[in-house]
Length: 404
Image 1 (tube, helix red, strand yellow):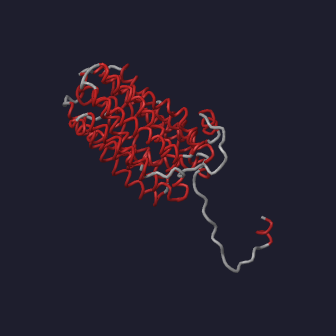
Image 2 (cartoon, one colour):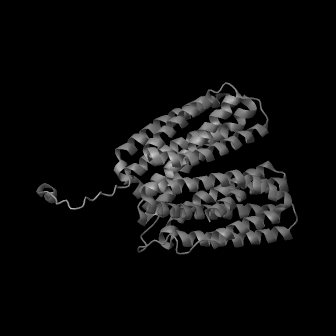
């Protein structure tokens, strides 16, 4: 169910701007399509968590994918009846992108909640669930753009039909009872989630550190075309090779993190991975040639894949069950906000100064992640599952034991 949902979302996200470009030839409208796809996603977090807390993650996930199936089918039918180009066709695609982005984030909050519940049942092995979820998401990001481009060659109707089938598969393989709250509904809102974050120091440290890390990663991603084309004088195709290599490395890192955490624990793996990510980000800014640049970007993105497993594992342990949806939504907003800020920084800084911007962001990342893992170390009792006591047969308690 998660694979079908993630692939449907990734395919739509990457194919719709391309569809607008193909039908209109306008780069401005293509940018508008990307904006209209992502803006409602942030708005979705204002109510997605509350829906999950009130109705249960399984039911909300199923309903969001059923609605997406109907929406995609109707859009495909309308596009089949309309001319291949024209303002009406463009308007339909833009409207679909906005609603599709909103539904994608509602289902994401739902499936993250389901994953956290599965992880809690595994106790010390919760990171295995999070590693699988992260691997699925990374795989969808790798396959989604390719699938969207291939389907678009066959026509918009084929693209929409495939997305509809993926969404329907996700809904059909979900139990509506999955992720039921198991308690009376509680008042749930972004304010509830924000209050929970402030009252959970380990969660606040985690979110702060990851927000700073996302700022550095966002600047790196936004600056990649400029660095590759203007700084290293390679073609636009080379930009795709950078991210293809990074996606493969990230999948490998996610797989390796599961085994490494089994042996060394969440905190130790997270601290080492954060150090590697910061060092690689500094090396990226100082890369003398394109080969060194692509290697360092690959290391950064691989580290980010492992850090994502750490984030999801700790988040599932730290957020209380009764307000999980609303608190999850707040943490996602706080971690995602630096991404548009990264775009604004790249737009404001001259191309020649981008390496210095990367160095500054890497320094902020290093300081924030150092403080983050120092804070997490002080609050380890909040997220480490308690060990079960070993009972010794035929041993009578001493008077001191009885008093304790």
